[in-house]
Length: 124
Image (cartoon, rainbow, N blue to C red; front, top):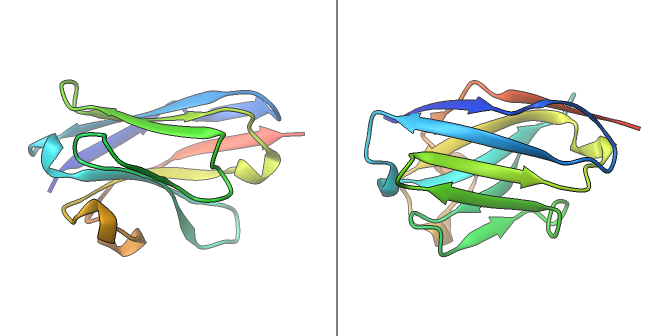
């Protein structure tokens, strides 16, 4: 298992930007695809962005495509989520997660290690 700790959440106004970070420890970071999953109030968790082991492939949910960017640094054992043009509907707890599955077959159930989550609130 890999241990994950998120940071960078907060309260911002619509249109602002935030950058979430997730620090990993415990296993070889590059063995894992990494994902950001969010859970809005009263809703189920939703896969938001995924990045392959060496960063060559990414996936975004339609709702964030063009506004969010996932990246990683295997040298630093970190993954990031740059969130631009934030909307009130982006309000959620954002979880960082790691999985040892091929990028092409990843879904929300593929992630075996999860962080504790970081709250993002976007006000109007």
